[in-house]
Image (cartoon, rainbow, N blue to C red; front, side, top):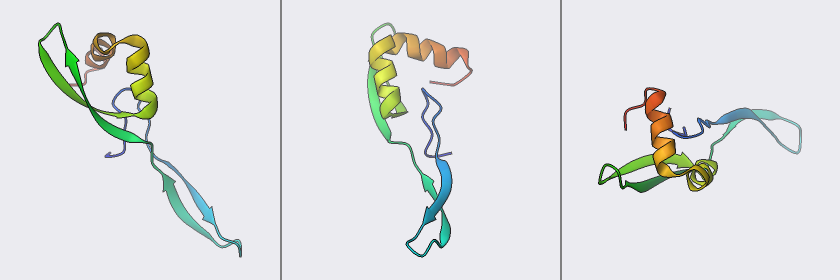
Length: 78
């Protein structure tokens, strides 16, 4: 899944686009995914994460060390 946040797990939402004549066609709402590089001081290296705007706020709030530890406990390889 390409439009998927590694931190929050946000993925696209699906629904209909409705025209003026009320004809419906399928569409999707992608999350705002950014590729960000963070430095891990305990390991002395950088990690690249695909995170949403909300995921960036979570990292700012909790710290990159806590977020990486949470991701590793869930079984994700970083």
